[in-house]
Length: 230
Image 1 (spheres, helix red, strand yellow):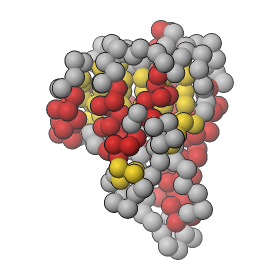
Image 2: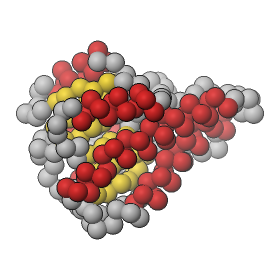
Image 3: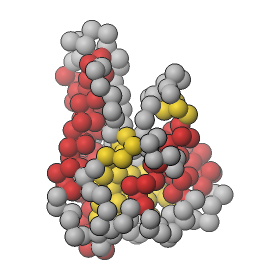
């Protein structure tokens, strides 16, 4: 596995939960971290945790539910004047569980796609070209193996869509030193996963780091499973 000491990672939704664990795991490998949360205040806990590591840490903030707000986050990253070597697309929303699964309205699907798919496309379009130019990059998108639960259809269909996105983009990245892959974190105890989840959020490590640490000619357009890799 490669050495990422001194690389820079942007991790969306890293103010808590899985994103926060990924930030800690990468910091432990010597990777500098760009923490992202909805507000600046939300980033403080993760920034405090990262102060224990000999790395540089930064904070960018903003909602990811509109094209305008995503571009505001991108502008904040660009103002840091550093390369984004790792883009870890962790942030997502889950709409409400509907026992009557024929009652999901269009807005639930639209909101899920905006945050869980469209924002990732926009972030990738902002940072992938420079990764290609530099001959190195790692893009990881969080997906879900939820199945047979139409009660969560807006969420699960958006996660399938972003998995397909990685598969198609991967074909354009061969020979560039840039890898795009998916990570299924498993059912973890987070705000989204709930208190009855099979695993604590800490169990996402070290498996969640594997798609970052692959070689430049390693897997591309594939799905990694955090729990299986622990």
